[in-house]
Image (cartoon, rainbow, N blue to C red):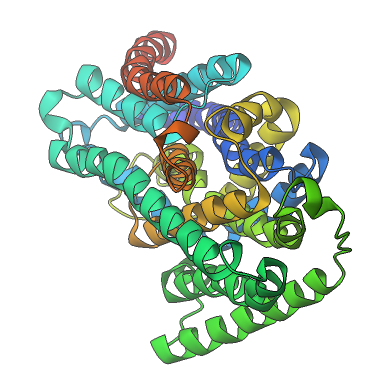
Length: 421
């Protein structure tokens, strides 16, 4: 308790710095993955993707980012053995933030699309093992999270595969693909608005004290989906079609129709990412603030200040702007060849999976989901459409991330303990 009273201000300052650093890494790596699909499909320039991310990533973090934060904070370790030594937990959370931030900086510099969720979970587990004990880790919870890392890309891949097959049957493999693309485009855009809105309305606004009944949530989501569909219809009508283009590429006009539609999926992907992955950086930060402001009490639950969500959103956006282009190239260009129709399916599937996961409080990896969704789109054209060597390297980077985060966190924990203890 004395250490908390003596260095409390310094701990909060370090938590803010390390939290900003960690969320910077989230933006440079994970958000870059999320936006890389739109850039790789040629629907958005890097500058346009950054502008969309600034608005919707920040919005997702602040509006719907509170629910999953509690899972990262409370579910992974049991702090009961150190209830009389709250400074141990403070050292551990600071070490976890710094360890994850360092690894993400290295990976982003190299252009490796690693999992920020892997990074922070591995770091928290690494600190807990050396700082509290092996038994303090909730291994059942860890196993569920590991299962989600396997299940989430599968779900993303299945959804994107199904969407791609529907586009082929309803549009591409018909006698009038352009006419059908214009006809069905509002329905696909409606799905984007409806899915994001529905799940956010159901569970995503509790920390804003905005409670809606299921019927009210459904009505709001339907209205929002129709509004988005109308906006998409207006944008599609403005697309200039040149019939000569189809002489070289039969579906060039169809791809032009889907290009403006990818703006909506990019927005939803950024919002979905902000709602889920902001927890990776601000969860440990919230824990430190709670312990210090309560005078050393290791509470099981506490209010999440809005300024922490704002800080997390700002860090993520800054990371994308400064270094995100490197990872963006990997996810958008190298797994499979993307066009606007394929990119649309991948992003809609990934956004749906991420937001559903964030509403259930399960800290899934956006990287895993998006890679799974892009693979699903590629599989719709056959295994030969995928670059299996690139996929293998990506999976290897996922495997390495968790133990690296754990080792770095253990090192930083002993360093901080030596400085302040």
